Length: 253
Image (cartoon, rainbow, N blue to C red):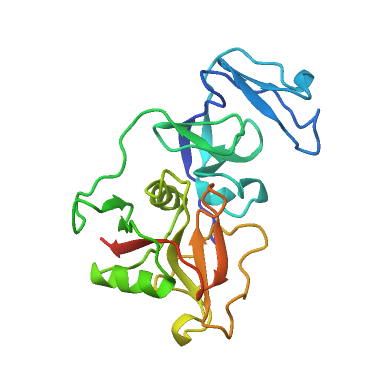
């Protein structure tokens, strides 16, 4: 039996640079195609300005359901950080972590202020803690096998990612989400069949890119995963052999 728990959070949404909010655009643009630019506090659509009459510059604070309620909603697929249920909108939408605000594309988040993860409780100063894991980012590009060895040298596994917050902050260490990196999710690597995390974690969290995962590496040494493929935090499956990327390592704490 699946149990669904509802938790209400209070989140502040700022949908463009400055304080402002959108009127309902879906009635004007049912195909959901949007092209926006920023002008001061306003977000303007160049092709359909009639669809976006700016509302008064206020910051709406509304009760939100927990992120898990939207975990499998297709509208959340591109959200760079969080995806939550908005009761006012009556559906799921992208949101940002504290210290970030939502871009006009309503998908990616811009850092405005606030602390970043620290190394307290981790193996060293070049690690950072998010949730129940400490993470370390390699500086050099490596094959997946080299990534396994690199992480093992630091007493770690290739990274396990268990939620959207970890997924964002780990990616942020790689040129602020502009570089891809190995994570520890594989299928058929090392004669281990099925999708498994290197550290044996049972987390069900995933952030697959469109049409992934694939079985590209089956019978050819296994299928591995590069994260941040679209620079929005999505994961791309590919043959383990023949590719190189930086590596993220993790240890549970």
